[in-house]
Each structure stands twice: as C-alpha cells, then as structure tokens.
Amino acid sequence: MSAQLLGAIVIAAIVIVVMIKQINRITDKLDTDEDNAVQPPRLYANFASLVQDKIRSIRIDIESKKDDVKFVLLEEVNISEALEKLSDMIRRLVFFETMIGMKNGAKNTETQLFEILNELDVFITERIQNGETLADETREELASSYEQLKNSYMIESM
Image (cartoon, rainbow, N blue to C red):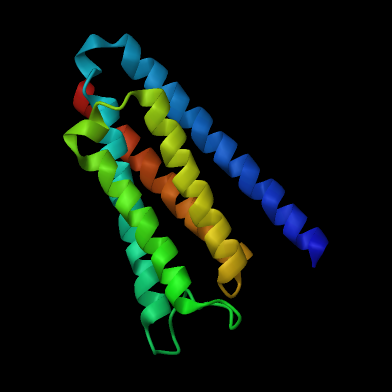
C-alpha cells in the first residue's frame, strides 16, 4: 500500500509541476504582450471558478445519501471537518474573482492557486474512497479545463 501511495504522490507532483510550468509559460507570454495585460487575472478568476464548481460537486457527493455518488468519504473521516475543509478552499478561491484578487500579481496568484490545488489533491487522496484514482481524474479534468480556458484567451487576443 505504501508503494502505491508513494507512486501516486510522485505522479501527483509531476502533474502539478506540469500545470505550474504551463501557468508560468502562459503568464510570461501574456506579460510580454501589452494587449493581453488583463488576461492573466481573468484567466485565473475563471479557472478559480471552475475549481470552485469541482469542489462544490465533491461536497454535494459527500453530503448525498445516494449510493451512486463518485466522491465518498472514508469511514474514519469526520464529515463535518471534511466539509469545512472544502468550504475553506471555496472561500479562498472566491478571492480570485474579486477586484483585489485580480490585482494580486501573476506569481502570487499562481502560488496561491497551486496551494489550493495541492490541498484538494491531498484531500481527495487521503479522505475519499478510491482517492488516488479520483485525484488523478480530478487533476486531468482541471488541467483540461485550464487548457481550454487558456486557448480561448489566446484566440480572443488574436
């Protein structure tokens, strides 16, 4: 079991590093293009909104009494603490949509987004049944969503 956990952690770290490099690459490109100066904050705000939606869907699954939900807490996990942790992540993500959050600076914003994404990954891995698999799926889903957002902003700038 520990070898599988170590493997999952290594894979998670690789995916996170790739996402950070993509965010940095985009930020660098946007910073050099004066016409796109407003895009990083909008891009991050929209991405933060997508992450919030994902966290809300996880929360709904956890609170659901149905048997066919995707995200189910491990039996030993306290449901109220888990829900509070998810709510805290959502509250922190809302900040990116505010005017103050949009003026936060690209590097600082990237760091904060990375921290929240990492917390979400750890939360799923450690507290959800089939956590490693679901964490991988969530990472891939969010990475794909980010790529779609990034591409739509690049198209808008042309």
